[in-house]
Image (cartoon, rainbow, N blue to C red; front, side, top):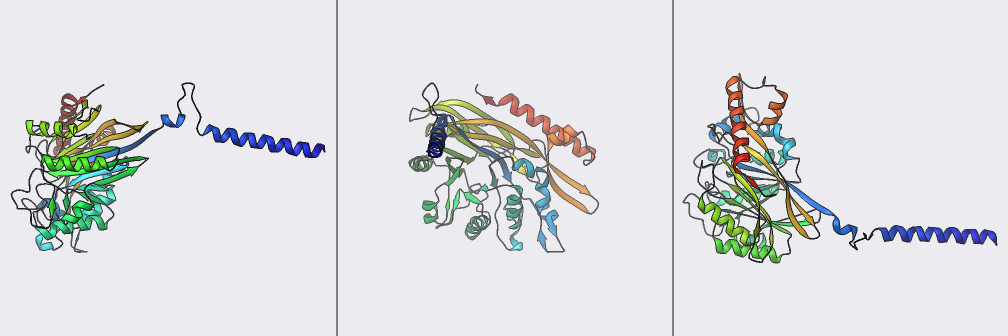
Length: 385
């Protein structure tokens, strides 16, 4: 009998332990709030500017032995910085025409497919394709560029192979850590090249943008990001048209606006804005991400940044956090039998004080670029406390 009582007591204790454990999953604080409700989910982004491939870059990436173009050396030293984020985005400001006869730099860009392999290897997963060079090699190359990106498991938006493609893929949906985000992209122009029938290029037309944003909102996303290819080239501050468009976009309910095209960096801002739905929250814009890689070697255009921020979710509320940037200098590594373009994370070299990799002229240019970048962004950006 005592043995049975002991067994029953043990069973009773085990059941109570299980009940306590289960109830702790939905534990209640003294204020009556579920502990789960205080959980913060987060997606961290790394965003780069324009990926450009000029004629000199094409020439120096060519390998006679394999009759191929290798762009991997350009990104080796920044790969770890790109991979600090959950999602990495860049603007592909070139096209992929396949035929080497159509490979060219400015003014009509055409690049080997291997640029995509290098970008994917570096950590990029999303490419915007709506920019003023997207039709440089015509309708079929626009379609092929979209297809080649998709073949590599990467995502793109801003150009579409057909109206049906636009309808089915109106925006990229990003889902991670219980956060669902819509990503859209638009350009101010196609450099005067008429958009051929059948393909779609997202142009900056407010009515269409508003419709796309509304469609995204109706899809129950938590947050919306918009990329614009806009502004005046080589201007270090946004103009009135850029500011007006960003104000319009925030009023439509967007949380983050990313900008490109000027080929130089423009400031970022984080401030509280009330949209047309009456929702007030902090919204983020960087007016121009500048170049990421190119052969533009003059001051302000010879580098860019990796721009970091996070989208956070708590109690179904969205906020922006962790804003920072990593200056990246485009170094032309010119040595006997070697001429490569390398992206250098500047702080890493300044902190180590090891400039043996650079000649005196490159070192001077890199330090100048770093000082210009840090001063410009720190002095002219605004983050509301």
